[in-house]
Length: 610
Image (tube, rainbow, N blue to C red):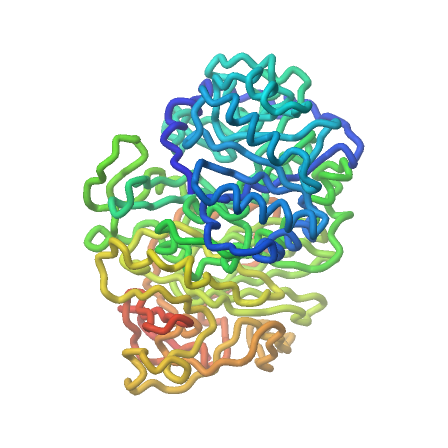
């Protein structure tokens, strides 16, 4: 997690730029000249004790086509130790890394000290070299004495910092620039406001003009949400509009063709733009309140063909050629944006900082978020996509290649399927339902990301949960993950184990056969590709009720493919075990075990279908 208060001043791009779509010139390059980075926070990795603790991150990033991690560092006492381990792991796994100096902790008068750190690591085998030079970047840092840095480094440096053209910074000493603002904004580091809307492409254009042919590091990010209350000294509470950003932005950068791309981020859980696994070892800065049970690694899976196309110099119209397997990725927030959590949210009391980044209650910018379920398909052949969001069923014809769809959010279970020629080829129910309530009492705008076919369940480790209860105003949450677990049988400390619950069978992945006359009448075979069957009770998130009294929705945003047909909720027939008849309770209620947690949902009317 970084303190972004500095951005309030330095990220104010000129408003109303809005260049024509063709104004950013595609820079035709050989694939060997293009590199993909992912921003990696060293500041939360003090609990790693060996190079092997970085291996999984390195291997997974490499498998996606990511070339190097940008290792964001401050001045913590453990920084050198963690850099040593990360550089060694990268070398062991044929990955590259480079240092990104965070000027929330460094200051611009430390050019010599920055250069010394470059010299310390620049000769390591895993150091990224570009044009025969040590590659170095930063977060912020406008005004750094670049000559002092280069002198202390002692070797040629390819310096591509996160300086800001709108500040009038002298760019003559840089070799490239990183643009951090990967989200539409208001020109003052917050979500767009009426009359103040700076798009990500506006930022691209400003940087490319300032660089005048030098290397541009274009940002690609899926989301932004942060919700730190006064329980920490770095209180901040806002969102940038996300929705289908992860899909739309990849198409933009393919057509723009910059020399470099940086994914923002791999593991910044505090700002919810992580694509790396929850299980990646890290300490808890307090973000676990909205990160627990919210895996994002489906975004990782989705990025692979886009990365391959980018490195090959392909445009967005050619990405289909890089899709080698069928994948459906979906994401959604855990509750509608209008849910009222004022009575229990941690940000309803004043915070003791003047950063301008803290707002009471809902995060600043919450109105920009669509109440919707977002679906992206990357398909080898055309298929039919069916989405059931809490009883709101929509069907789409998806062509081969990459496509995006939006379905209005419905409270209850979230089910998805792919079919071809009348046969269901993939189907499943998400492990996390949408609730008309407050998870752990909070306004949680962090999305849950899932896939068909599903991957392994991804959970925070114990160190990543240590601060979950700090500052909470409810007593029903414990620092434990919950997805896919059985509380009554596996966790004797569960306070609800003695209640009278009926057994039910839960699964993330249902390979199903379909009645061709009624494609929603699945015959569940209970096949699990990635984890064992679990018996679950009605307090588990596998079990959910449909609610006809759904909140009102804004019109859905249909991208490229409009729904072929809308079915009524009563036409959707799922296995009976999915629809318990008992009323459920509200609030995230977790057991005291270190392995499991459960959600309870209140005031949801149980409805059975056919």
